[in-house]
Length: 89
Length: 305
Image 1 (spheres, rainbow over the protein chains, first blue to last red):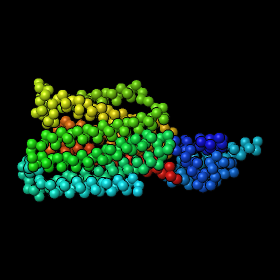
Image 2: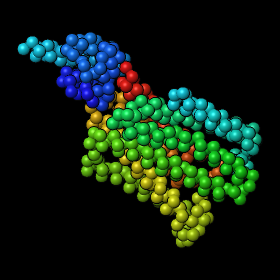
Image 3: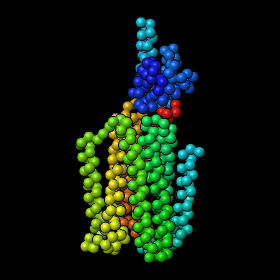
Image 4: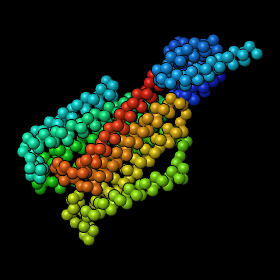
């Protein structure tokens, strides 16, 4: 998939894989396309926080376990912070 | 039209046809005589026995269709083929409940009017059931094998030995119970409840049943194995529900086929402990199909949100 050429996208999928397994790539691609109206491969750090908000909404429809949802969302937020720091550095 | 609404339409057609024939066909002479029933009494008793089955068929059709819906949704993905094969296998199992029952009902009604046809009716019913088991368990087994290949999970030596031990115990006991009904001094004799000589019965019914059950048991274990090795907390939760449902359905079906083989069909209504055991097992089967439909809905939601 072309999206795998984008390291940021890859890292988001890698985090998601822990929660959604084989469906992770498809899930993130869908969120980016449907809510950010972008091609998955063009996901940028500016989109990340908006993506995290959409992911939280989507995952809340899959499970009622708020603790796991928060854990997943905080890992994605951490990714956003790391990415910003790396870019600034 | 979704697979679920199509499955429900077919279910209604089959259920109404089955109940209609069961109520309209003449009362079985042997059952009426054995239980001192009037024709109306016979049909009332038959209805009371058949209604729970009709409910179980609904669970089966609904569960299999939900799984088919999910498989269709992910058909282009690496797991697509595995789930498609599993869904097809469970469709065979779901259809394998009403269709053989309907055919048996017609055949037994012919035998009721022409007693000389009873052996043919029982032979045909037995072969239809073995074909359904073979095809269904083969498809499910192919599907689970495909999924375990993706996660590179294989049985450990201990697990393989345990499955083999369970299967051997099941198989040896099955042969023992079947052979009790046969005249082993004359392998060509057909004077047994299966109306087949032993040399035909062993390769065409006993061995195919044992093969189908082994494939089914292995498939049940492989889906558990896939659920254990696949990543994804939410995905694994749904998959563990699916594995429980599939295992319950496969184990119940094997038990029903086992009991029906070792306690041969009479070709008419028999109120005995076999019927009681089969009915209890059917409840577990229905629970299994319900669990499968819940799991398929959860998996589908992951792919849709």
